[in-house]
Length: 467
Image 1 (cartoon, rainbow, N blue to C red):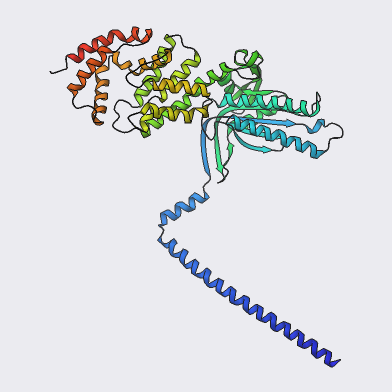
Image 2: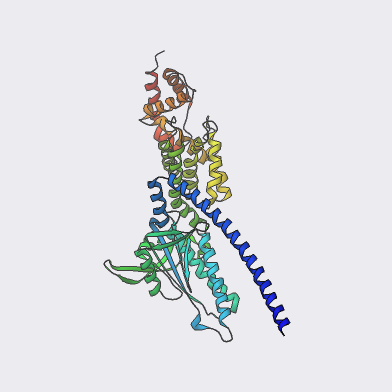
């Protein structure tokens, strides 16, 4: 018995010795790691000391501060999807949730197609907003169109699932106004919007009937040209009185395929494009303002605005359609933007920028080709092949028959001189006389507006020539 006890004690001692050795090894590793951490800490402390106190303060404040953006005109949509109270017999909760997930997934896809930002989904409520993060003037129309497509999708979805039987109901509230958006996330940015506009939208959705798209009077005033709407009632708003609300019944017949009020037609897209042009114009004029070389005294922002204005004026005078006016204004806007790339061949560079940008604004391939052809027709000497090219060529040289011809002409001389393309003002005046004498406006409208004045310009320039 004693021999057995001795052997057991020896085994325990052996295990303790081994464990002690393992602990000592672990301690040595921890000591090495601790020494490494101390060195790293000293290095970071040294770097930290080199940073200025003001910079450190800015870094700490930035880390604490929540990024917040203000949008003066956003359109908020809240959609309530109800289905739980009308479950069909034999349908379990997991099937219901699967269907709800399908519906919400499609709602998000619809919002994305209309460039509307999904804000959040809470249970069976879907919330999104147009006009953020990219500001745009068409967001009220975009959001109402998205609401109609959501409603139409749900109808088709249920018909596919269970024929004429329906278990899902949808009601939508929409309101337009200012919002504040808190931005979060790095890889995937999300927006949480707040303000009276959000609260009002929630209340509109709450009083809406199932099967109804209900909009505020603010939204109504911005979309009434496109949609058939009927008065729904008033919503009391604290400190602001009563808010009128309208029910959206669909697109107006003239803007829908076959006049059915569901799917938009070409007339809708063209009219919306004319409104959307304001957004494109803001971007291009800002680009010209920031990127044009300083020595472009003639081909500047003012010249582009003049051409856009003039193509519309002559276009209406020549009896152009709404679509032709849209194409003309777009070509006028882009015809000199190529100067941000290079002086020579700027027309071609302008078409490159147009081809890159316009598909994002729903211009068709045929429309883009037509716009680019009109832009290229402004290359001197002008040789237009059709009415639209004639209109832009007349608009581009409209200054020849204007009362401010001399000062405008001098800015073009200064520009050419800066490009080493003209030596003296006297040479320029001689060239101008020769050019104007051989020039003739192509459209009847331009000839009636400018041709007489143009003859006076020749006499005025001739009086300035010294030899």
